[in-house]
Length: 241
Image (cartoon, rainbow, N blue to C red; front, side):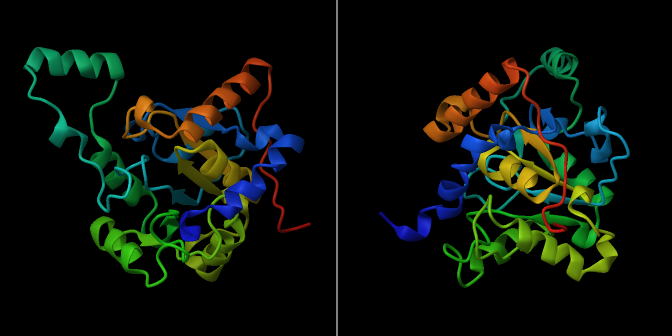
């Protein structure tokens, strides 16, 4: 086994679920990246006084194909359809744009350093020590990729350090950050551990049947909790304790 690919952070933090199973539950869920309500404050209707000033994006199977460097073009791979079929799809899904358009709108709503990509395949120093992969993603997307020594879900302190370093982001507390990702035990759990809001992208770029066994298991676990009335914890900063 390549030890560089092992996610020790996820392995260690998974045991926290035994004591706090709600750590893997999101504050909001969207079907795909295309469904993100922008600005993201709209996603958290049941929470009061939500003030999202910055956004952390997962990459793989969220807005990009796993291990790809560019924003996924869902229209490029869509087979040619008649105008009638296109209208039916729009009516059913209530979507009038693709992933690339959503990504563009997100960049406009959260410009500059207010939008940050945090990926365990591009930016994690154990896999990308030279920063080459992170640079490729940055050049392709125009968005900063965070170099981090600890993989998700344990890199919350590094994320907060980044935003506090740049006051133009307006971030002073973790509950001013929204984390968007497709994995419950990395992206969503990280958001809850750091006291931020989590948006779960339920259906990623890859069909569910092609995702990892772990991804499917965590979905079933979350569904089990939700059926029993569990909810995501309210954002509360661990950095102020």
